[in-house]
Length: 308
Length: 325
Image (tube, rainbow over all chains, first blue to last red):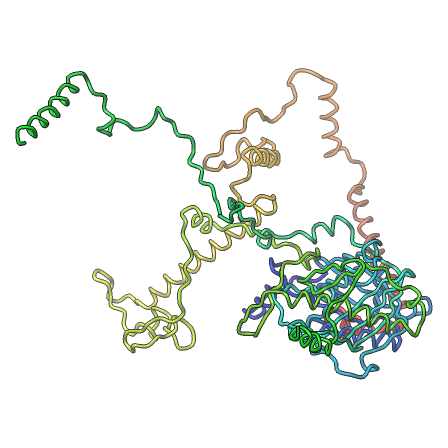
């Protein structure tokens, strides 16, 4: 267990506060680590993934003894210490050659794990051509109806969405769309992972013509063991804080003519409790009062006639 | 018409940006992602040579579609440049950490909430009349502490004050007293907060009256007189209905005889020189201590055997730095 670190100065306090739970979260960090035995293929793959995920990624240059499907405690320790929500572990053995395990954490406990075997690798260095700049958001394409129909593929889709494009943004610079990652789910349990760089060509119209050139790492990932997230953990992980929920505008109606209406509620009016004592005009008049009033008016009339 | 022909001729120079799809493609524009559920051409996927080309074309079509959507978005020109405003997310992604828990309000915060007092932040720069410039309120080039020689080069003795008293020491003592009460209040707030959160309530006053009373009643059982003579708090009421149970003076003669004899036996009636109970206790403790060392050694041996070369130093670094970097 980690002992809780107490901040001894303001800088440390700010650092720890940054790592606390927040309403608007930080972009998720990734930890890329090699297992006890690795092959060249796996090491290259890990390096490429680290390059794609920079700067929100940590790469351990030393090998660590870690077996994701057996040793959850070690994964949680790494996640807590390095404040990473994603982990990628690369191993190689005779039984599981060129293995990549992707792990996602919620609250520093394992949410889901996906194990793939790499086939047909092509690293970024082996493909000549321009590469994309650091830290840009990739466009993503998911091909194949298996991503909608199969449960495992659905969670894999969700995972890769979160892994590459999980950061919250409200606006993007259209000039900064430089690369696209495509994942294709084939019927024989393979995910074809391809990365291309985008070239925008003239099209005569405002929207450019898109041309792609092969860029970054290409793998055929063979699906092996998959741990989908447990329902109760998923439910609590997906909860939206009320500050982020979009506010519904109440009491605004727009009719067919386009006029905006709102309603004001006045409440019930109790007629027998209205204040009438202080209003002269509401006073009851007796019979004498009425005659006086008439005389007055008659007198006025006479005067007018006399004047005439 | 000539104009349309010219336009068409001009357009024919460029490649089209429209894409035909059997099943319309789904987007999540905020995440810049296209979901294409059209059936894949499985034959080409199986062949080694054509898959890459097929995938490139397929991806190009889907990317073209989402780029078309992106260029339709409303555009905001900000300092950073021209940005397209993205709509809200459609896909549901899990969070990294839990939702932040509401901290329990302190006494002042509760009071301020009731009264409607807003917290107004003080500016760091204050206008200094002597120099006519703005100086920081505290810190590097700011005003020094009140009551020190650096700030108040003279402190006049008050009207009826003792002329021999050290005014600077007086200010220092007062300040110390104030900071101590502040620390006390902070500690009190923290205690109340933790007590409230532990019990699952947001406020210490939310403890129900009867819960508190049951807790008090349970604590009174610690004394033989069941809390009858315990020092009471200010408004604490007398405990009703709970008394120290005495056995009857006249009644079961046999039971009384047996209990008296048991007491006598425990005190006087022991024939052994050795206190058997104590001996058993001591022996079990000794055995446990001896076994403990053995168990530990055995566990360590296993660990050594498993590790390659048994480098203990590496293990320590491993734990300290959060994994071998």
